[in-house]
Amino acid sequence: MVTENDPADSGLVYRLDFAVPGSGDKVLIVECLDQNGTAASATSGATIYRNNAITNFSYPFGISGIMNYSGNSVSLQTGQNQNAFWYFFYDTRVSTGCASDRRAIVATPNTTVTVAQVADSLVASTRLGTFTWTYNDTAFVTGGNGSSIKPTRSGNYKVTVTDGFGCSRTSANVNYTATAIVGSDPQEIKLAISPNPNNGRFQL
Image (cartoon, rainbow, N blue to C red; front, top):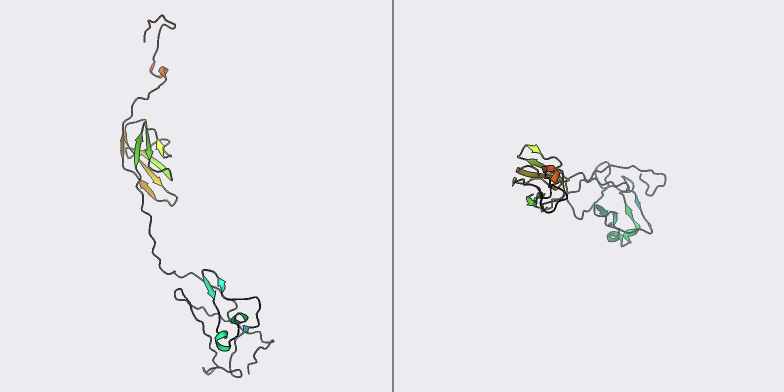
């Protein structure tokens, strides 16, 4: 014989492992059967714990955006306030290891990297990322770890930009012609003026 609300009955905890197919509202129904598989009564089968006369509680209850208990059937069956009752599920755990519902994602187009010549410099079209400059497709340019360089040799130059996710984009080659640098130190080209001082006549 089963005694309802027996304070000496410590009860048992059962692992149910409900699989929840998809999102949306679900209904959980508990049916007690006796050992013969027929509906149990208070004298022949199981009874299920629930709390009643609860105060300072209201549905929904759970984890916002993941899973919530939204109510129970006590108000439909007896007309009582459903917030005064908690049904059966005392140690609920939710696992989201399964795949979520599919959702369309619009990918951001991959922007092409270009190189432009500005005065005596080559400048990449972006300043974000890690930069690797190459000369004639073989040699790494010394100091070429920024978004711009000042080449000292004529030839083909290009840049590879690597973003924070490890994705790389490489520009097309740009042909660069090195020219004399205006404003060089005269001593570097052995320029001399004499005599010094002079009366307006001098040798260069």
